[in-house]
Length: 136
Image (cartoon, rainbow, N blue to C red; front, side, top):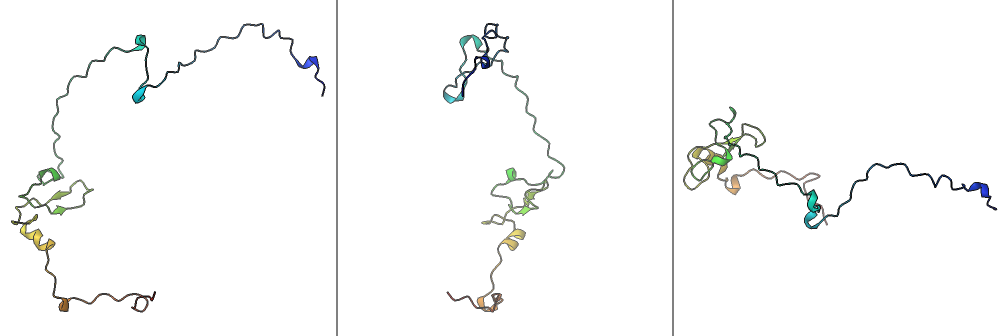
């Protein structure tokens, strides 16, 4: 296919000055540790530290006021949980422990129950589908 000279511009547009461009962002290399290296003139002066704030302990909410929390537990108080851990009123028993156990006398009765002799236990539930295991 022949090329016509009319397809090409005469070049008169190339002689015109280019339109001003918006300044492009300056790309900087990232140094060790992921920090951006700055030129000495671009370094900001060190900022002054914020004045220290006085820490005031938060008042316990009414839901847990006077109840034993996880931070209150030690070897001398009952660690029986009361409520659900996700609820705001969750706490521990907090009574005096039964010596040698982590719980008070009442909660030791719940936690440590003696097993019945084998002859007095209920039989195990029957297996589904006839009660016998499948042959291999």
